[in-house]
Image (cartoon, rainbow, N blue to C red):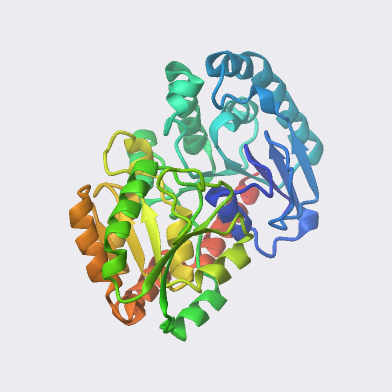
Length: 394
């Protein structure tokens, strides 16, 4: 089938969402794969090739990041969106794909809704994140963000087939749109990852390496973790190192300590996985409050699955209603805690990191969680079945 991916990000974007899309497209013939996005592909470090990439470019100075966000958002809504919708319609008319895979992310939502409304029925939707999360309501405007969220819901309900990133998100979308999902679609473990886990990951070492992958979204929780870990380092039987992997540098943060923290930069997925497999533990934080419930309760950090693929017990810290905390509580994959008290967290970390063989303690549950929830080949088959249904309907 000729497939067109339509979303905000380009084929080789950083982050968990783009990584999931690339994994689900594994072995898809390049000659049958095209891409439409709002942001240009400025790098090819992740190796995702496409037959052609169409881009209705948002000028980088016009994207509402920090300054003049209201003015920039108004420009995108009133001038750029009509242009981008026409651009997408022309792309669809010229390419005539068998199936469109729609990932409604931030500013791709308005042109996607305009271009697909009643005109293009053969599409599958994957909801990775809600638009009204983090600081988007302030940056894009509360009413505008609310309208974009409604458009994303319409895209989900109108699609031929659909999926979403977590069980709580699927339930929430079902309750609000009446449409069900084919599966929870997220990053997954490949056959070679399960083979690696079957061999065990109990490596003896003189240092306890803790890995963290990706952008730090809840820095106050990360700082709490660092402070608690700092207070027990000297009481642990081995030296502790915290290894950061990602596109952003945190070396100038007040909590960063070069004595036991290492920045490893932004790595391609295979290299990141190899580096994480040299660690002993991993850290997955979410907000401890419920101030941003649309993200906290419904989104699911890709890093958690990457940690499982690396065979790492996970230190999961966050609000008990968050999706990742519920998953970690379902399986004994490491230390799971919701405490905001530094002293209590210190004691919990001391007990966990004193375990001479964390893999022996948590390995079976890591494998059970990965096999039950995050089998990449099973998810890929289900997704491709959805594509077939869409193409057949067209």
